[in-house]
Amino acid sequence: MDTSAANRFSDDISIVLGGAAGQGIQTIELGLTRLLKQSGYHVFASKEYMSRIRGGSNSTQIRVSSRPVAAPLERIDLFIPLDGAALTRLSPRLKDATLVLGDRAGLPDHPRLIDLPLTTIAEQAGDHRYASSVAIGAVLGLLGVCLELLDDFLLQRFADHPSTVIAGNRVAAAAGYQHGRRLCEKGTVQFELRPLASVTGDLLLSGSEAVGLGALAGGCNFISSYPMSPATEVLTFLAQQAGNFALVVDQAEDEIAAINMALGAWYAGARALVSTSGGGFALMGEGLSLAGMIESPLVVHLAQRPGPATGLPTRTEQGDLQLALHAGHGEFPRLVLAPGSLQEAFSLTRRAFDLADKYQLPVIILTDQFLLDSLSNIPALDLHDLQVRHQFVETDAGYVRYRLTASGLSPRGLPGHGKGLVCLDSDEHDEAGHISEDLALRTAMTDKRLRKHRALLEDAIAPQLLGSDDYHTLVVSWGSTYHVLREALGALKGRPVAGLHFSQLYPLPPQADAWLRQARQLVVVEGNATGQFARLLEQACGCSVDHRILKYNGLPFTVEELKQRLQSLLDAPD
Image (cartoon, rainbow, N blue to C red; front, top):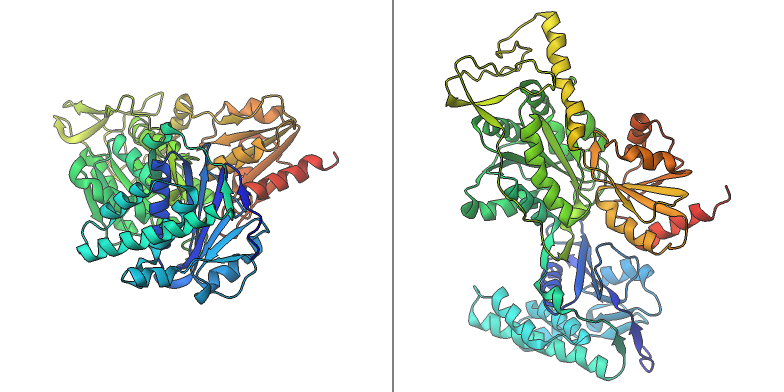
């Protein structure tokens, strides 16, 4: 490769690491994101990986920027392939300006490749497994990050390993660092990144951690789940926090047991969470319906992945909205939320527990693999007023669980908390909770339960308008498409287009109606094949969706991709 002319990169760098499972990609991602954030750079990382423990071909993209970033790019500025399969698979995304660093001895010939002898350096340091530390060091050397920070990271990372392992990784990382510095000194590459002191104090969180922290802030003290990717990380994170937060964690034998345990916990006065994915949620349909009949609070985290059946278990999709809307037999109220950012993953999960408690119904939190596995820095979480306000009452001797009320809400008692009897039954029942086949009462009880829908609108979460309110085209998004739409719209400044992002999907917030009706052209962006949210908008609001921008290959939208598709719509003749 001719390195006489430097590769000059802006203040927003896209780094992609590619290789097989087991080659240390996650270790490199962890090290780079932590150290770059600690050095004052905004970071965002997202991953795509195959469903296997070892082998396959996986990749991680890390954006390093002088400004906040939280969406994936198609562009690759710096590519580090750890094996030949990664170089071959991702070559179509490489451009003339892409800097490719890799171990020439183990890779096919490529015109952009600059040799980074990962294996040789690692073996010289004592073990070929130190190659991950070499790669971290090389990138930090390129960016001019302080070497002492890397040294401290390695001491913490390998604190429970023998001293020889710690020493070997430090030597390997230092050698990689010097290799990266030499490329800069030769003028091979130049960066324009500007560190900000304020970023060093930011939180570095994944989506799974944000959901877990939101649950804890919402008073969650019981989680029952059966592991299923990508929801498992929420269960794992909360299990790690159990000792500090008096949290009961139960890995149930299956999803049916998990949801029924959660209902039992709510009945006893706990605040319970179930974390699952589409296939597991399908098994929970009967339990969800039971929650509707007994009017129990319930919070279910549904982490979407491509189906049907096992589908692509480690990829992303927004394909379970219709499942969340219609799961469970019979008619009963529910609330469906879909966070679009780390901050919302925290705040909406926290709020879900209060709303479930207040309205005595299931609240479903829709996330997806992309949101949960993404990692970025954020300034802070809103920790204002963390007091948990329980909605149950102390019962008296005349207490009846299902008293008919104008709002549809009956006082919820707990067994043993007062003198009253708290009677629940999965059959239709009278106000006291006793089985009844009085058909007039059946109608009254159904109407009572459904009146909660109207009450729910009092706490509706309004959608967020992205851009100016003077628009011709309105682009609607929900859930994890928030940041990519926001950045794509930012690249279309001056055009009569705005975005409307929904975090509450059902019931639809009434505040959306005016914005939707103002649009001359309505576009919906979502990660599924049939336009599930577009269909809901048309049914619930009576509007007509002119265009659906859909993606369902298991990968999230990239900024460039969405910008191009929006540009085509805006440029099309009326």
